[in-house]
Length: 186
Image (cartoon, rainbow, N blue to C red; front, side):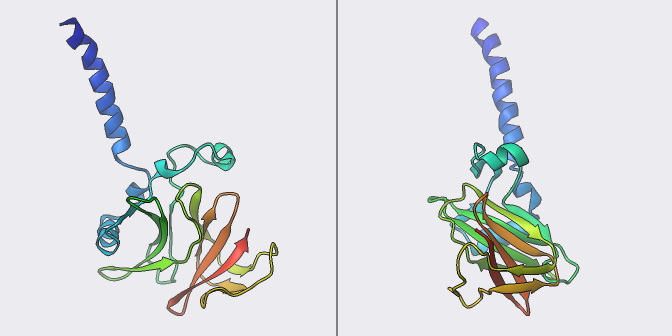
């Protein structure tokens, strides 16, 4: 009987903690219809979780709190007055990330995989970027590596910026039905 009295509080504590951590901060930000569209199009990937991040990173310690989602951002990226999303997915076995732009359409989502250079989800972030002009970083000479890469971009709508914390920042702009990008920081 004494063992049962001792185990009950522990089991309750474990149960409460499981319930609290069952809903990840990142997944809660994403509408159900988008979650389903992502699962269907990318079956080997899952939505990146807040717990996928390395909280010993110096930037986390000063700017962010543990459990905060840094891999989902939302805004109107295409100028149609609908809420769109940018988010990281993670391969279920390898932790390799994909950056996805999800544009809201009438009854579905238009999903596009954006180019990234991150091998692991740890340290990845995605944020919104204000309308404006973005130029290639002065850290190294510009060399076009991809057809959608630009040396300079002017965004009339909110855009996406993603990369590795305290390392890179690539700005993605939706323009005339395609995603263009510029390395804005390195």
